[in-house]
Length: 63
Image (cartoon, rainbow, N blue to C red; front, side, top):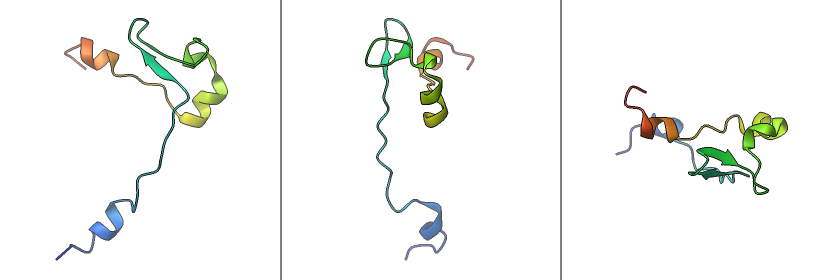
């Protein structure tokens, strides 16, 4: 038997998300396809909400 609350807590399906940037481990930055840092595109930041990477959590133990 499935608890009633699980019908509302979990989304019916995960939305497909395609980010227009990738993480460059050499630069430790998210970069656009043309090589520019993703942070320079203000409209992109407003749409996606963030370009946070996991670099800090992998290099700092106090995060």
